[in-house]
Image 1 (cartoon, rainbow, N blue to C red):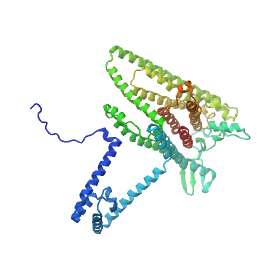
Image 2: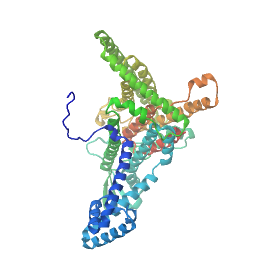
Image 3: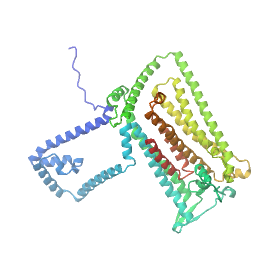
Image 4: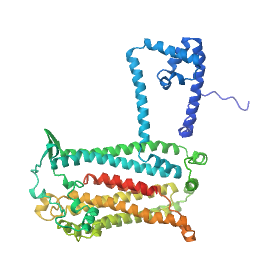
Amino acid sequence: ELFPPEEPRPAAAPVDFLQELPSYHSARRRRGAADGGTQERRAAPQLLAGPPGAEAWGREKEGGEAAARPVRELPLSIANKRRFRAYQQAERKHVSGWKQWKRASSKSMKKALRDVKEVSSSLQLWRHDIHSIEGKFGTGIQSYFSFLRFLVLLNFIIFILMFSFVTLPSIISKYGVFNSSFAKIPPTNIAPHCTVYQPSGNKGLVYFYTFFKDLLSGAGFLEVTSLFYGYYTIDAAWVSTLRYNLPLAYLLATFAYLALSLFWILKRSVEGFKQYLVHHEDQFQTYCNKVFAGWDFCITDLKAARLKHRSLQHELQTDLAEERQRQKKADRTMKEKIRIYSLRISINIIVLALLGGCFYFIYWATAYSQKNSSVSIRCDNTQTNLFVQYLPSIVITLANFIAPQIFSILIRFEDYSPAFEIRLTLLRCVFVRLANIVVLLFSLWSQISSCDTEECKACGYNYKLYPCWESQVGQEMYKLMIFDFITIIAMTLFLDFPRMLLVTHCSSKPVQWCGLPEFGISDNVLEIIYGQTICWIGTFFSPLLPAIATVKYFIIFYVKKV
């Protein structure tokens, strides 16, 4: 024979990433329900045969989800339901009390967990708003607003943690609530002049614009409040006979909110990592998935549908470009490789030079701001220029805006694949935003630790200009967060919103050529990640900063939603 028969092979369980798709799970549930119903119907004649059949059917379903179902919901006839009920009642007489209690408690626990889950889902913050956004604009934009909700809840929990264990005990001790007292124990290994702290709070009659300036800068009347580190001068507090160690509570609360943030972020990351592996398991099936299963059926808005069409088109074009890039890379000659690698090295040198320029300007702006504002603030000079105080925040914001634009232009000449271009650009943008904060902190510390006298060296920092340098760092983080919030609101209300109105109601060709503003998910996510990083760093120096971050993201949600 030309084709001899093949030997039979043992059947292996097929493993395919298509089994991870939601449609497969729903189909499997339908098949499972149908098979379960068929088995139950096949078990029905056994019940007709007598108690042995009912007993076997009961043992088969015992311990499963069907055991918790009422008898009236079983797929049996009336006569069989009566016989099965009689079998259950007879069985209960022979079951021990411990087993009966175990079954009843298991049922009650499952029902309670199910009820709690339903109630918590109905009370979820912005539940209907996010579902509406998902229906109009798809799951991509919905993920951004879900991330905003996550940050609101995270910052609120951090605020509750810091307020309960740090701020509230200090307020109780300072104002003598609940007959409490406190002991202020001066450290023995530090020079006395290093512990003297006289805040620059406003004294006497002040103008209204001074309060407004202090509200934006964190100085003046805000410096003496519980918003900043310098307010917490208590070493130990007593409530009745209990001693509360505030410095230890301060450190433990800081470690607790960092650990909570890390655990919660890892939990959310693991949930999305499986989907990433499923979608990138086999590159040859990506075309089938995008053509036959790429449409988001939650979309009901016409404009959102057009955006989804363009998104799918862009994804298919990107996949085809990836194929062409791989083929082009395989056909490169040695001369072309040398040219491309030389060009990439040159562009990376330009990128490093750009980063160095950003870091230098941030360092210069910080030094100039501290030199021209610290003395005047300590001397209670109301003529301090607010622009000088905000100069580091302005320079950092400009660097965060200009550097990504230059990166997106340079990446086109490096001849990478489209997917790698996006990843490399995002990596550079994230590095710029986070490195700018690190450079700001380094610049601040270089100014704080700059001292020439022996008294100053005994303290380890310039105690004359910075009697409480932690409050100064907290003020810089406070100004960064306020300016970042003002920038986001201004860009949305004064650029994107007027542009949308003009394109919608004006038929002029130049206006229509500009088009509607597109919601860049990656750029918006980078913005809120940058703001959250400021919150994590600044919470130690400003314990109530998470409350400001909560209000900030709460307002941003509704501004972006419009």
